[in-house]
Length: 191
Image 1 (tube, rainbow, N blue to C red):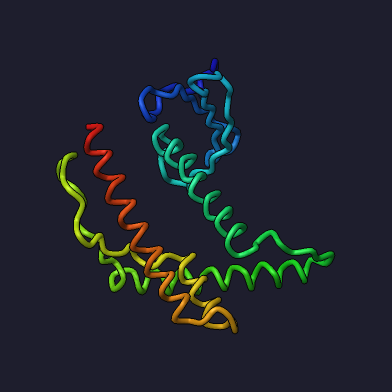
Image 2: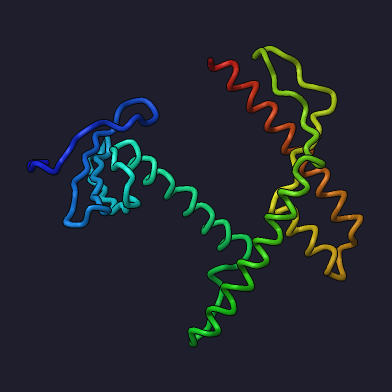
């Protein structure tokens, strides 16, 4: 990228560096980060805003573009689990009401899951060796946001019964803990 305001560098990625360059714009707080895909050579353009007084270094800009992925995952989670995109409204006010209710439900479930995390995490310690036998009791993973929603729906619905839903919640979390333990053991074998 020619020009005095262009700088080039490499971004550490999974196995090989990803070429990256950033270009200053007319504004002292806005930059254009250009990244090139390693295999397809496709260019990705990211318009970055850096707060005034902070240095605009390439690693900082790359970190900022990497934070985009968790945000997109959160929106996908909200759409899949809470129906964030399930509104058929024509007016802006109705759309805002739907969004506020969905985000409030998601926030309540997230806060409940975070508050119950320490009390509900009973997982067995991860394996140390690849040939280690599984524990007799794998424990349970912590209550997740999706599990809080399922339990809330079971508590407010007429069928099935709450003890039935709680039984399946315990079974599901125990099964996930066992699967997680075996996954970690398989990862030990690869290293």
